[in-house]
Length: 389
Image (cartoon, helix red, strand yellow):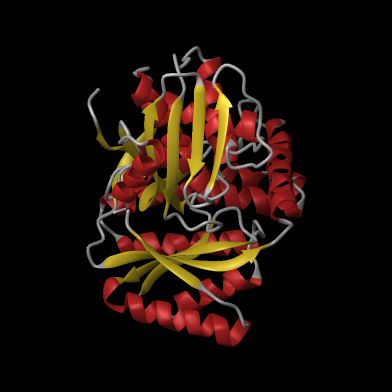
């Protein structure tokens, strides 16, 4: 068990057992892509791949961070610390910085070692897990009594302000707030949230990692945001209450199609329809209609492919291959696009066969290696065990 191994590593390095062991999971997003920055809904869930942390207080002002998987360490003083030359310490240091800025100042330093089994580069938000896990550790070690949603916000601010990535809040929210066997419908405008059961005893979720990382993903992401904002600006002349595409109905968009440039219209149409798909998905999960949910996944991919234009040939090949398999209820690209993973809802009986076939097809047709991960919806960030002191 990873937690026990990490605790043993901690004892070997610091000559004492950790006071606290914490697990912070990665996440998937079942539906609701590119809706977050448009004020819409997303539907993420925490998974059984996670980052574990072992930690204890120190008697001085030093903080020692150890990235177990990287076999690297970084030390700094809690009263005077700056960014390291290597990037990985920025994530836990950024969280500590947000705590201090909010007035939650640890009275002494700490030892912290972390590592896990979240596949790197697969879009499962290992960075958010590191941030949420660090926040949970600091809160527990020093008894600050910070509520979970407040820690989620601090984790996001750490990435925005210290790491320097202007990400949304979904990844951190899913890692901290997940519930086993459930998905979260998160309102990205108000942060109101609701759990919906994902009852799938005969089906499993499989991620197919394309291995593709296109350089244009970052610039295209910014362009899509600008296109959506341009659509909102055009529609505001007809309704001043519109703030984001969350406030736009498909009927309104269609009514004013003549004043919206075609490319902007396509982007807005996808977002408006995707926000509605998340609402429909909630109802289908309550009715335990996995087949209907799977069809929404296919619709999302088609929208991302043809309207939002953030897919790529490799992702389209994976979804088309899954769509031809009768035992696959749904499949779509997951994440910003231009590479990364597809998410597949597959009947358990043929899961191994599906992985074998799609892996072979990816190799034979595209000459590329495919890595697949079967994931289970798990609980969010929490302590695995602690020693009373």
